[in-house]
Amino acid sequence: MSHIIKVAIIGAECTGKTTLAQNLTALYRTKYPAAFVPEALRLFVENQKRTPKAEEQALIALEQKNLEKELASKLILEHENPELVFLFCDTTPLLTGIYSEVVFGATDQGVKKIAQNHDYDLTLFTQIDFPWKSDGIQRDGPLAQAKVHYRIQAKLDSLKIPYRIVSGGVQKRLQITEKYIQELLTSLEY
Image (cartoon, rainbow, N blue to C red; front, side, top):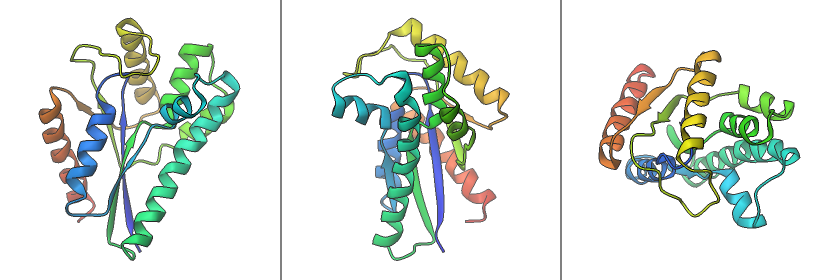
């Protein structure tokens, strides 16, 4: 039976989550079956050509989890039940809930339920330590970024979700994350 290592990469908008998830996938794919799990919100915006409404937040959170399941199943099938499989998740339903609070003033109960099932082996919290830059999706800018950043930290702490801080440039983030993953694998005896 395959052990799926799920690495959650969370942080405010434009903090390098996608770049880190893609770089980690490329790096780990050389040794293990590995997949990049894209941000369901980004896919929604690209497909619908609009931002989601409050009542669509639970569907986005559910789609995030479905993408994880689909990609894990695909890797296991393609590689005939490998010992280890890596998923590098460009955000989680927890962030969907936080953005719902910020944008709509409240989090839908469906989103809360999905987000509370934070079933990741490692949670990486990207910091806001380099200049904000638009990524092509309608975003709110550096002030909103800081507001979301502190909400994420408060939510992680209140839910007692252990996390590791990731900061610095692209290469430094990759190096520190490799160290965190190695520590995880050692603790799991892999």
